[in-house]
Image (cartoon, rainbow, N blue to C red; front, side):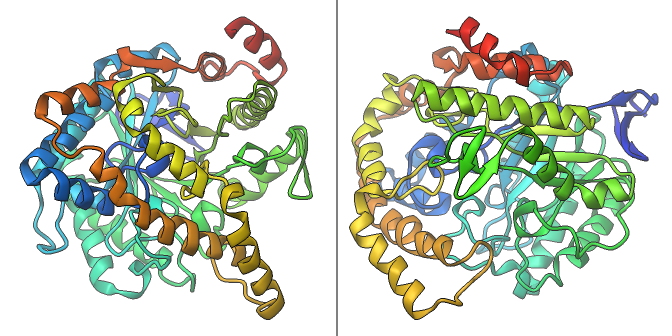
Amino acid sequence: MNSAFLSVKGDRVVRADGAPVILRGVGLGGWMNMENFITGFSANEEAMRQTIEKVLGKERARFFFDRFLYYFFTEQDARFVKSLGLNLIRLPINYRHFEDDSRPFEVKESGFEHLDRVIECCAAQGIYTIIDLHALPGCQNQDWHSDNPTHRAFLWAHKHFQDRVVWLWRVLAEHYKENPWVAGYNLINEPYDPEETVLEPLCRRIASAIREVDPAHILFIEGNRYSQDFHMFSEPIPNAVYANHLYASPGFIEGGDYPGETDGRYFDKETLQEAFLEHSRYMMERALPVWVGEFGPVYVGDPVKDAMRYQLLGDQLDVYNHYAAHWAIWTYKDIGLQGIVYAHPESAWVERIRPFLEKKARLGVDAWGGREDGIRSIMQPIVELFRREFPNYNPGPFGALWQIRRLVRHILLAEAILPEFGELFRGVSEEEIDALMQSFAFENCVIRKPLAEILRQASSGQPVGDRVREILARST
């Protein structure tokens, strides 16, 4: 066996030669599973793709997305990630690249083109990859990032969808079973099984299907309620890493001071550590590795607030490194909200969609990074109505306010504005499309220097939290 192959031994991840490895890296959000805040559209990926196809036609739309997938991550990106000392990239994928809903259980070989290319780019730099099924047939959660146009997750109630997931993982495992630089398979991103009865049996079904063709690769398994809850799991699956996601409230778009209060709760390094231990209890009690598969604040352009968010991040990384946890920050590249690198504000892409971004912001249609200040007069009466008439209404996964925002802002308004996004590209030539997509090429992007430096130090295991001010001063 190639010495680079990884496996789980007790609470460690080790190479085939026995050397321990701590996986520290980034998620490539918005690439093979596109997300609205990352690249600028609204609503969910399938709806956006349909909108672009209506405007450009099938062939030109195919070219549009192919050029995006190519420029979004190339050899230069892999070299930059390596320069930060990171050794992992988590690759979120959408099942639609590999299977059509109209032709279930028929593999689309074209889906492997860009995935293979990026895995090879990373391997050439000694970077491991984790294949993360981020959007599943039937949708595994209620949000846009599972390419869900509704507020319902149908995966859990329909065996047909579950069977397709099991089939797809077997296809993926068959394809990558010999690749030592694929660290493993992230089975289901941020699941929310409302009844808590299907998630573990489904994970075991997937694991069995994978093991029939690939006995070696690690399985990465997330907890329920968006990778928060593990109490429904029994004995761990062999050669598996269980993963939580730990977004801290002060890092959200409307987060408060750090250290300080957000939504009536006080946050500092001690409370971050408590949250990590709470959400890692299942793993630690069983002496398993811990992987924080997603975390990270957003940046609002205010130097004071952003400095607090860098401090928050530094403290999080210190906690994870103290406990020898594996981690992957979200996200690598976008148009300026959260990425380590981002498309230049004067790039062809950002310039073209700027009026759309401004309208999106005014209407608060994005869940991640959106505010509802401009539509408070509409949202607040609905919230007050529910408090008055339905005080016990508490739907999963996150309660009444989340549900109201999902239905009004992130579905109704997001769908209504989406055709305007498509019209921005009516009549564009292939040459113009190529130029637009080059906005995402590494050499045309901006590096968020303080974030890059924080990750560079954390990747080596150095304490970061106490040095954030020094890093910020040096980076500016």
